[in-house]
Image 1: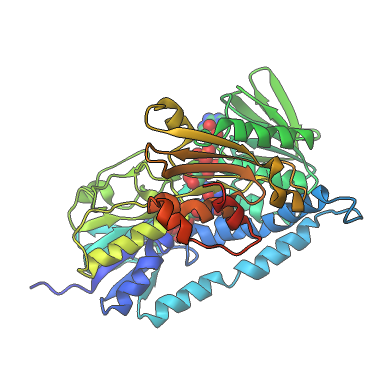
Image 2 (image 1 turned 180 degrees about the vertical axis):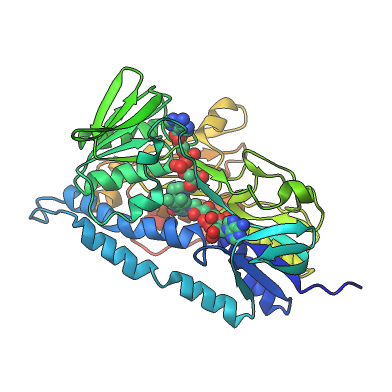
Length: 443
Ligand SMILES: Cc1cc2nc3c(=O)[nH]c(=O)nc-3n(C[C@H](O)[C@H](O)[C@H](O)COP(=O)(O)OP(=O)(O)OC[C@H]3O[C@@H](n4cnc5c(N)ncnc54)[C@H](O)[C@@H]3O)c2cc1C
Ligand SMILES: NC(=O)c1ccc[n+]([C@@H]2O[C@H](COP(=O)([O-])OP(=O)(O)OC[C@H]3O[C@@H](n4cnc5c(N)ncnc54)[C@H](O)[C@@H]3O)[C@@H](O)[C@H]2O)c1
């Protein structure tokens, strides 16, 4: 029998790796993680955690504006203090995650990993062998291929801004564009969002997306639809974003046109691992076209949303595979998602579009939450949800736009995932008064 250096070697140290690698090593397997940058990857360092700290005063500001009169006085966000606070909260996360890896005896190999053959990875000129290899290299920002694209910035640079620029122009209308437009506006910038189509956040219920756009527009954000950006040029007074019949003077440009998989210079072609522009191709066991090489997290070409909960589920599934605890194919649970605009839009399960396309299978119930006494407590101005039931009147999908949409969708998730009927619903008792109790009361 061949002796390898490791049972499992992961390339990349994000959620696609560490949530599984730590318990796997704790079960006695010999595990290594290769990382070329900060331990923990995107989510803790330049994604979810960083973003939610910066967003916290934005959500608070909205709340204070809604109860204005009850609470008096002007509210303004001090961006440099917000930035310093973010740094305080997240700076220790790589060491914290490294501590968890160390204490489970996971070897961390700092440097860029490349495949040499199906059992060998080269890091800093040194070759390490493993019985199984997991590719968990994540995504990086797409850059528009236009003249002056080097004058634009990405989401990481936005989240490191020590001062918020006076005028911010955002290209794209996905998660990053909408969340960062919300933050920049609340921090005092004049914000313009350029859409190349006519819709933002395509995966979400469009009437709710339009409510958020209307709200941002009322605060001064400009949304310009159906424009192809052609160039970014330096002007006498900052920058100019040029598009079809459009010239926008601005100080700072965010390229938020999506994220692309890290598949280059990894040795994939040489070893025979198949991939395409959406990521690495895997089977229903997350195995690539080379049988002992797996993929996990955002780098996979998949239909599930490329989010942290998906990456955690995949790395945990692989842990069970490598520990010999399952040979079953991966069965994804219902994966919820949320856009941290203000108000938020969250969803889980069957979408409104799917339900509308299949009226024989689903019943759609729309709720205007303005009449809900609990929502009036905080004088919330925007609140709607849509619940989708199957033929047995079991909840199969939900979406909400409100300040606490993520909490409502989280509260409803067990009913969707486990297909609760009346007996189970009756036994779920929530604290009262609370948002979960109100949400549950709708079922
Ligand atoms: C601005 C932003 C906000 C986000 N907000 C949310 C949110 O609110 N909620 C949510 O669920 N998701 C959010 N996401 C998505 C979330 O961050 C990702 O889904 C998650 O981080 C994916 O984890 P991963 O392990 O697959 O990839 P990553 O965390 O990207 O990790 C990949 C790692 O691999 C390393 N690497 C790559 N190539 C090599 C190599 N050859 N050798 C060594 N190391 C290598 C990289 O340095 C990186 O550390 C956000 C993303 C961004 C960009
Ligand atoms: N709350 C969250 O969970 C959250 C927040 C931020 C990011 N993320 C994750 O990060 C990833 C990246 O987010 P994102 O917002 O960059 O991507 P996205 O795919 O959500 O949005 C990309 C946007 O860019 C537009 N676009 C594409 N090409 C363009 C072009 N040439 N010109 C103009 N517009 C163009 C698209 O129409 C779309 O509106 C997503 O996969 C998401 O899962 C999640």
